[in-house]
Image (cartoon, rainbow over all chains, first blue to last red; front, side, top):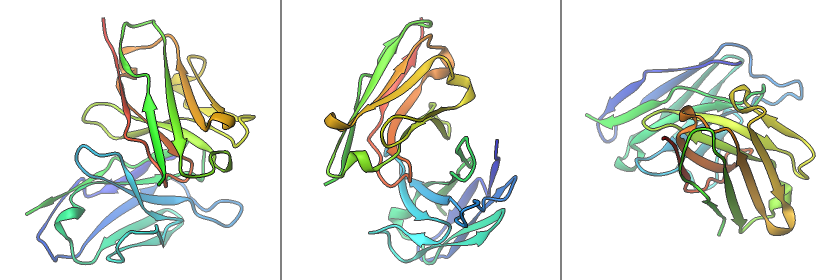
Length: 112
Length: 114
């Protein structure tokens, strides 16, 4: 199975600070069809996850553009340019290039 | 408005069965691969099973193969998860989601305990 390693596991930030989360895969997530199926999710406390970014860098409809995704192959990054209070929660990367789908261990974003 | 509403969870003894349902609305259900994802208490997310548009193809994580069965009824816009021979390690909140993870239900809790 593909292993996704997220770092850091916990991130403390102040409002307005820019932060980045890394997601490294144990194998390339480039599909034979040319797509890279790496998504980013946010799970706020007591809520189901919500999709933020799909196909590495595409912003889901309704998601603020302070969120951005980048990367290729095995290394991916989620960046938040100016953290807001509503951004607090646990961030997960997830891949669906290879079966079985796998999730990263999560990065908890909290206020400093 | 898109909605996915899970039901059927609860407390069950080890070795017994439970069937989860997910009622979809607000989108064309038959256009989407669907999946179940679970989250054990205080833990991360774990994919459980997926099903193709017409139900002709199904996929399972190794730990549930032979015990869980995913199915769908496109006429009713509903997704199901039949869970047999339940174990304590199946205790989790189960989420219904689309394959692209764009839509999620609120989740339903399953507790396996004697």
